[in-house]
Image (cartoon, rainbow, N blue to C red; front, side, top):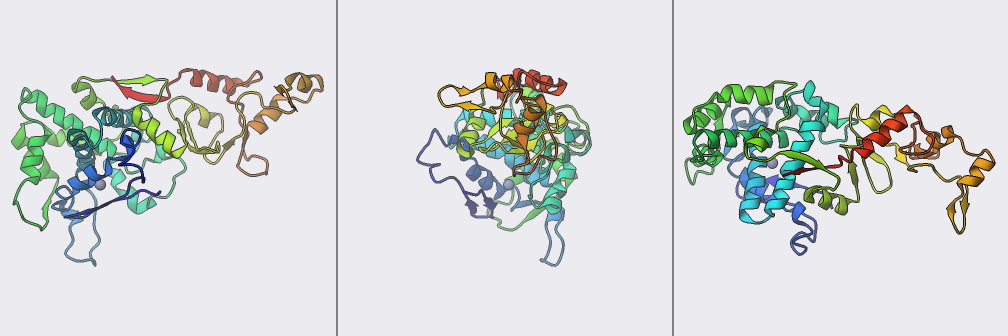
Amino acid sequence: MGGIGLEHHRSSENQQEPKSWTDWAGMDWDRNVIAHEFVHSWNGKFRRGADAWTPDYQQPMQNTMLWVYEGQTQFWGYVLAARSGVQSRDMVMAMFATAAGKYAEGTPGRSWRSVEDTVNAPQLMRRRPLPYTSLTRSEDYYVEGALTWLEADQIIRKGTGGAKGLDDFAKAFFGVRDGDWGEVTYDFDEVVKVLNGVYAYDWAGFLRTRLYDTNQPAPLNGVQMAGYKLVWKDKPNAYEKGIAEERKTLDLTYSLGVTLNKDGDVTATLWDGPAYNAGIVNSTKIVAVGRPCLFVRRDEGCDHRREDREGAYQPADQARRAVSDGGDRLPRRLAPPLAGEHHTGQGQRLRQAAHRARQVTNLS
Ligand SMILES: [Zn+2]
């Protein structure tokens, strides 16, 4: 099925896979949408960035505060899903780990584009596929926004000796004018003011560096202050495992630097990653890994000896056969094999990268 979560003030439209509520453990990864959309009743519909409120449909709506509207909703969506039990604690930890991994190592575009600037992504791209999302960035105000709010929560907790947290901000910011079904707008300064009312800190500086500046350090402070660290393992975390099994995809972003669909098509290439540097780009089809078969014996599979005897095997063939552009035409770009006995320097790099086995992210 497709996917949608659409917020309204007193209801929401939530799409999940058909078995999400019957296969409780297996579909744990798929049940965040209700928690997220529920939060929007307060964050987005009731409290709304001043430039996202317009008196009528003739006035263009602006999005500059989406890192509150969506970023903090993403944070509360994770937290409330775990608190309510609609998702397990382990699943939500895995979701945070995936987020931490993505913005620690999977988004080189952080060097040139701020989180705040990505609020323009919906108007520019309308959620169409991008050739190199890791470089262009996309709607990162959601999840990098959530990691920023996690850090804010930890700053408040640390500063108040655990007496307060972002819950107290939510109470002060969203919990006003109970029963009012209208909209109450805010701007950057009011967010800072309410944060300061909870715990005095340089919140303006905090938000400006994390969200408006480019080339910032990986947004892992919140994870670390909470007592965790991002680690890399050779098995996918629960969230990534659930998605991969459901969608029949393989995410090798942190080793080879590609994601693949079930047909071996490259659906994303990490900018400047090992695969990218070997010329493997989006829409490339991987048709073989290692030395491909030119002659197949009925009983024993690949007949490499016959290939060698007849001089049929050439590394260049291997390169051509290992990838194609998805059709019967010759590939636009050749790439060395992912692994094999005959390899170029780039092939060697790929093998080393694969060996790093940094396939997935976990918090421990
Ligand atoms: Zn949302």
